Length: 288
Ligand SMILES: Cc1ncc(COP(=O)(O)O)c(C=O)c1O
Image (cartoon, rainbow, N blue to C red; front, side, top):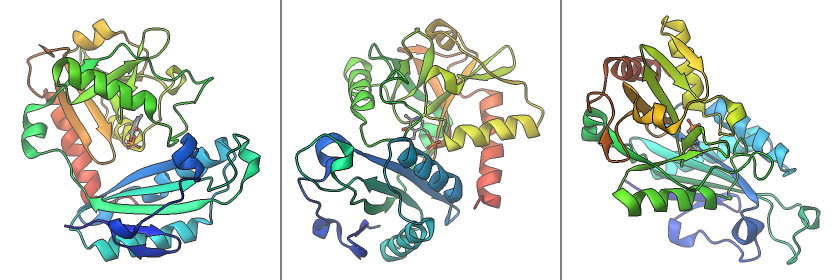
């Protein structure tokens, strides 16, 4: 199990990976990134993640290197790390410049790829589900830093997770939007099952439109499961029959406790288990 970093055009050990203190990613979170997981030894949905990386970069006016260059760096770093399953973080920063906020003051995009062992949730977490806490800190308003842009500025999410862990030791924080509706987790999207219907907040609430979320929606549609994108309240999450979160490195992970109280029967429900199974089959088949 090892970590390797692609930086400055070559793969190196983590302790050799250095970046300038003048890099705007470090100074201002002026960067974008993606986390891609492998499943059954292959990258899962890498193309969709790289499309989203380019879209995030475009939204903040950051020049992206050619896709082929990123793909090559990713492949070289995964090969050098040699892990059975990997978590791949692809970062683009605007680079180093003068101490000047103006993004036009530099155009020196840095590509960094970090490959870690996957570090997926444990089998016990999938079997029993995890606890989440609905936190007081709200998700960024889309007119501020749009949550649809996966930028390196994660302080909103960092503080949210800190609140959840401090308050109840919860595994994940669930953030609401300004209007009080449920938005998403600190690094995940959230779904509930109520009366046999699966709900997830629409992108207009102000969320990252997760790649895993999109796959789960496709699976619902392809398998005739009742699904709706709709807004719901914290009480509708607390009173759900089932809940689960999704992300690239977790797939579908059941949520069985919200704010220290059980959700539904307090164990992963049949709809969640069905989707976990369908998602696993998809991962086994692979998505480029
Ligand atoms: C804020 C946020 N929402 C949702 C997700 C899930 O997105 P994906 O399924 O593309 O990993 C992430 C992933 O890191 C995230 O950071």
